[in-house]
Image 1: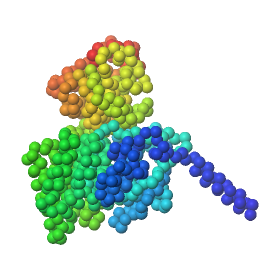
Image 2 (image 1 turned 120 degrees about the vertical axis):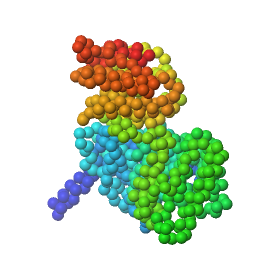
Image 3 (image 1 turned 90 degrees about the horizontal axis):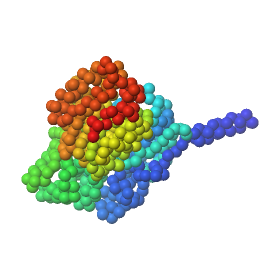
Image 4 (image 1 turned 90 degrees about the vertical axis):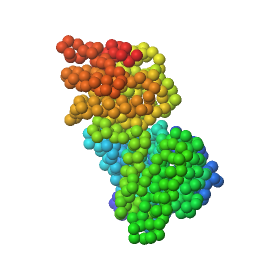
Length: 577
């Protein structure tokens, strides 16, 4: 008897000890707003995870308000080096629906990326009880033991009441503040809200968010996308990179003498508030069985015809920056739905692909074919959180004018100014004169610079000069990028800069010489100079100031054969004036 009691006591103490080793982080306790994709986050809400502010309840229809309590499209971002992550939460409604599993209705999804920006989905163990629990165990990234940045997508069709994220007690953990980038705002039906994805990450808005690297605010209201003024006026309050209106799967029920006028008035209302923001109007996705069922066929044709009439009217009235995502563009596969209405994961992927293609064209974010020209994020520098620095560059400099903006990698970041923890030449940086913006990020390659430019770093500032110095990390990359790949990427970056800041004089700096690679760099710089002339921008080669005898680097001017020291920066500073 005593032995049994001893065993039970030991087991109880072990369980309590294991629980005590988990440290819990509640988003509601964060010192700043952390629920991404929650529009107008400073306005009071009836509950922490509601999509719409409380004041809107009296202004919208009951169906809109009811669905707005669901956390569709919302996500949390955090950085941690934890080897185990646990998410515990409760929801108000039932866990599942007949045509949509609990993992989609009430589940969560966790994503991260590798050091070079490649997407990683973490499949957790889950338990759906009164308190829902997801556990992600044994986290250990190959060759990468530092912090990772995570995105946690919240339930699509349920109301979250409370949530806590648990990590190993000694693990680092930081909630990420709201993104400073302008979001894409998607207004629509149950399909936009996420029906019938198998899990939150497979809703088309969340797929699109990951592919575009830009927040997508989900304003999908199941069965209630009827283009009413109260909802359109709310959308207009959200400053957006682009608006998507995907209401036809609900709005088609309006008769022909009402529907086109309703669409036109909604767009005009939005355009009046946001004169320049692109607006995408999407066709009905279609019914896979419409060829067999007459009523479905007639509804589908009615929807397409009425939207085409509305789009033509808008164009004839001179309303600009209106784009039409057609039925053919969507190309919904025949087996892309669960019950001939709501998209499966297969259909959601097709939807997201169609939107991505159109949005990249509209926003000037089309990807290149070479790996150096495919914009991606990274987290290779342990000195700081790369994305946090990107976010700070946007948030801290919005609306400012600079004499010069210098874009580059750690050679620029660790020169001076800004928030760098290392400043090897702060005196020469401040000798440049006028206001200078340091847009360097450690370990950046051409593809990372391209991502930062495409994601708003130059959108809300102006400058007399923009100076680009990039490419050395592409040389260092395992396997290496060829001269052709590096030059092609620099040409694409020049295009991206010029399209966003046409008022600025653009200068391309040659790659600085580096230990044992002096001849390669010199050869490559000649090609970069030709590319600069082709692109009609200035080219300068400050690296010659850092060479010693025999064309080798002067070691007295470097800290490590790559980064200049204080004297090295003084030698080249005048090239950046």
